[in-house]
Image 1 (cartoon, rainbow, N blue to C red):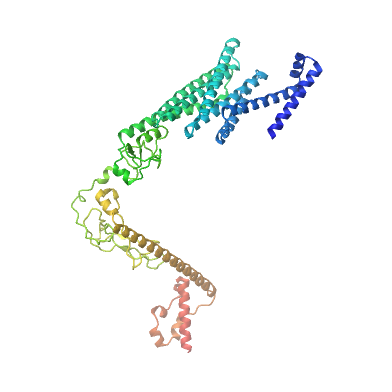
Image 2: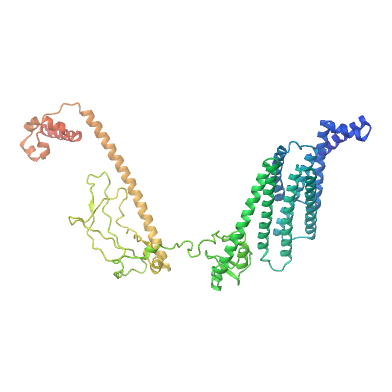
Length: 568
């Protein structure tokens, strides 16, 4: 409804302007001169011309495309904003040539660019559309023919104008239409390849190759055209800022096409030489449906390093665009001798010292449901909290060592004693009723494939053993958390009692101390015989001042207790 109002308003305004000019001048030529000399009249005529261009575009859209898809409209709007911005930058370069003809030529250029973008999106949709009608073919071929003829015509106009009038704004239009002509050529190649592929009974395997090389050739032509245009414009006018972004996009597209050609050839060579054919057993053990073509795989399937299986033809087409696994996105161009998840151990990992290369003693027999045994480690020393008064290092227990490759030997020091191991700081001891989990070997690279398979296990009892070990680990973790909580509560309680004792000492420090000599005279013989040596000591004032506050407080309490016993 809004568009109809705009069309109706522009028609009324243009009719009134033309009628007023003809009413004043009475003739055609004077009326035209009057309109061109009046700025308001020219603004109205510009609006009317823009409305006519929009109506012509809607008519051509209805003829050549019918109903536009949402993606096509979105792409058209996005590209239009960039085109309008580049047009405004072009106006700043050609300020002297700015005229009505200049604006009209740029309007026609934007109009034709829009249809080039639409036909490109429509041909790309042709490959994804399940049904292609004859009307679709007629519309696409006729539009490509019309656009190609118009591009060639405007290129000739710009060429002859440059030859006769010298370098002018026609250089820009000739260059732009040359770029549009290369776009028409690329769309025509895509349309021809898609049409040939649709009419075949079997999928065409070489279509992706032709498309890739066509993009490479067209991209190279675009880069050459942009470089020539930049050199000419810099020499004649100045740096064309409006052509910087399109030139960058063209060079990036050409670089991507060249990289795709090189990487695809390398990936296809690896596919033919390195990757094995999938056997019937491989197809039976996995889903035999190729996720690329959604068809079952019977023969002609390839197995990638990630063990995913696809049709060889599907992989060849897939590798034309991206060199990854369609399922897990694994880079297929990585070194084939280094599979994922199993990195090769270093060369020195399998070399053992002469002492370790001797025949080790056979391992003791294990129970049926027991997990794989590991080298025996010495038990941990008893756990003592850091604030315990007897927090001193413990010597390692004297445990006989077994000769083996992974044994841990302890060399005594000069005094013949084993090295002293400090107690753990914050780890609680294992629960007495739970067996600690076995420790894995320090160097897994020194184990052979048979030993690794034996540690992993493939039977039900191995799985049950793993589950039991995990449950034991969970129990140990719960016990460790519980003991740490108890330890924290105990430390907080001790700190609180220590603070209270300090306050008590400060409050009683002002009382006069009782002489130790009087304590000895007032004590009874029976009591003095049963008291401790510390309580019977007679200290001088100098020695009493050297005692700690807690010791003096303890002595005062003992003294008061003894005095109370004497009075009773």
